[in-house]
Amino acid sequence: MNLTKAQGSVPETVREHYEVLPHHAGECIRCGACETRCPFKVEIMENMRQAAEIFGK
Image 1 (tube, rainbow, N blue to C red):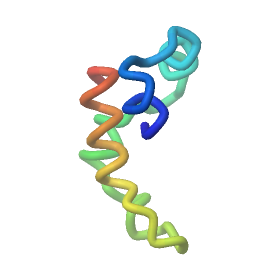
Image 2: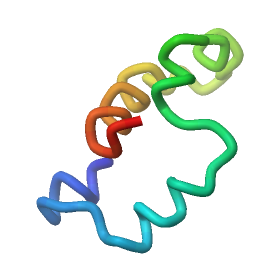
Image 3: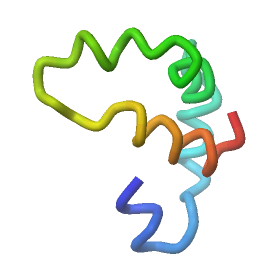
């Protein structure tokens, strides 16, 4: 998402790749299971919130 902020928009190829994912950020926000499984202390939920805002899913 940092690349998106730097460029000011999402490249179309990124949007295309996101569309074909089996799950989207909005689902991850509701589920939340990945947050407890991540051993790297990544702020997964915040990243998913940003993705849902950007991609609308």
